[in-house]
Length: 481
Image (cartoon, rainbow, N blue to C red; front, side, top):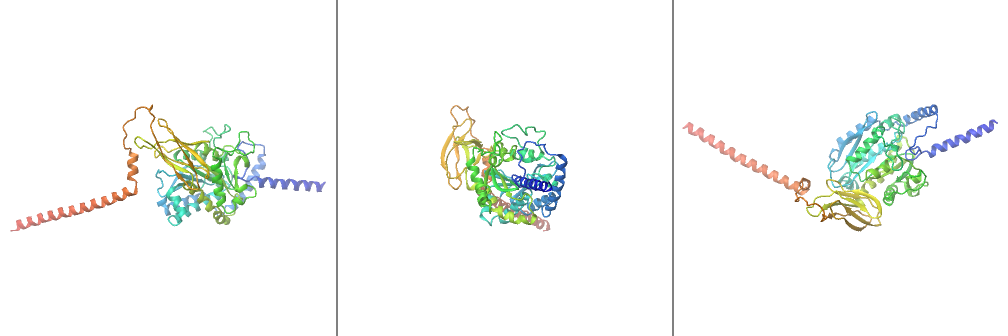
């Protein structure tokens, strides 16, 4: 009987270990987002205490939240010419969610694509926050030295949020201060969940407001617990574990393979073919940030699992950075090295039009920006696409393109429809004037003009001064006679 009990205990132990081993990925827990209260509270608290102590020991060598804030500000102090720092909101505990923008013209609205990296979505997955600071410093140190870095800084507005969940990090747990999994807190396309604004977490609200302010073309969140590039959809209508493709499945697979292929060993995965996976095929989740970005933000987002160990010892961070560095750079650079980009104008006066851009056969539409009317559409290379621009009051225009391995520029000029109401005479908009003023040639000419005007002022001032001195000198002489 004792032998039987020992065997049973060994069997349960092995199965429990196996459970913990397979419970990694997309941050660790294979929960869908629906609440499960079937576990005992006392056992949970005991596990959390032990888990906290273990992670607290591992935290040595990682940045604390205050260390992270100091590092971000120090980075900006060193690299202010190509960066801007700002907060997108605050956590439950009131910790600022600091973001870094890296560009040759930070803070300026331009006809360029924007990319965002988000780290530390889950509090007990801190590798992302460390790697994103290393990425920022790498870009600063190698700008105008490394061609790829220079390409990114000059042609992309890169935004980096090292920690989305600083409270969870300080508590050494997956959820935020309210113990909510932030990657299950977004509105879902299949089920009515997270629709109540009053219970949505402040960190989630901050991300959603961020998307409204900045028109991101693509993004990626960094997680731990597996080694794979995950792409939409993350869930299915029937909650089944099966491949569920989004409209831009080919483009997402291209992005995922780009990251995996540049990684040291992700593409060699024995579990995931080519180191990539459709989220629902891996395991479905609901209320995730990735799908929400694509549906509501017009942003192509990947969920990147960048280390098998969720919280590796700090001395492994340099190696993990080297394994992921090229992948991170290549993914951001893909925004300008691939896809179709352009602007939309009216034919009658050349005004920019915030038109809708659609691809035949792909049920997903993006919009050109309101002010500059620029658009950036990610597409998988090697295919032929029919691109259409539509705008109320204008004739629709379509053209067919063949995407190669390089980016393509495609501008549209739309003609007003004859049935459209009479238009006001064209006026040169202030935007056009600002665009002219902002051109390098104009700025050089303006500088030269200013210098010449100042020299003329000095010469004229000298002549007048000499003339006055002469009159004053003659007066003295006259009075002295």
